[in-house]
Length: 285
Image (cartoon, rainbow, N blue to C red; front, side):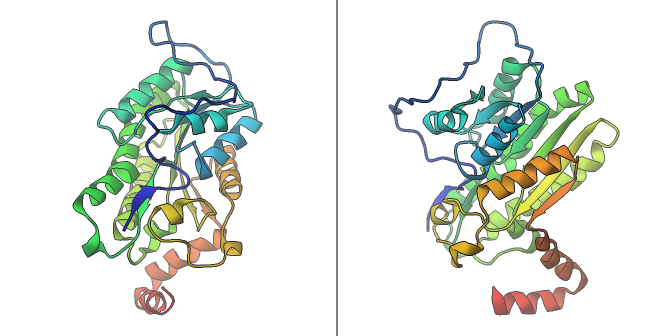
């Protein structure tokens, strides 16, 4: 089976000689000067080169936010940034120092981060016993570990400012567990627990945590994970729909957002009637 980046998050490695973009070139980080101070609200969006991440960046830009865009492919980030004042910050979050270096670059560029949208992630589909150990590590590293480390690096500045919001992108797989997506389900379930625990820990600091759970989204994620989407395309959400839900959740300081809202049902059935839930899952997958 194939391990690949999700449509909302993790890009294939950039070519050794990336293509030049015709898009306006955003400002670059001044590695030697003092940190800049930005008066506008600032959002750092990971996985911003395509899918949900790119759509989320565009939605925030529509409201005048200053965007910091992260992914591994500079060319695709610049496409997302085209027509905006967004700054691209290419970085590999799966690298040992990736989260720390990204946070440092972001804070150096704008002097503040009001919202972190942690959308970077990847999937893998197939029997767990067939999954190479290296791929187990890579999924857990990007989908869970890197996100936790990035939040750890960004939070102190938010707490010091007395404001901010962390947005974590989950999945229905983390709520109910999906067959042949065991590791991906585990990583997203870990994010769900992390979001709840962190939310309680940050009470009274002015910093909030939003956990977003989308259904199947019309991106390249399903193909890249090694298995195309099995339903009809009409059943897929658009990245813009999820981006709109993220935007509204941030605007309203909401703790959770399910897209669509009926996705709360499987988790409730599992909690109230686990036997019934498993019978339904065995029948309908």
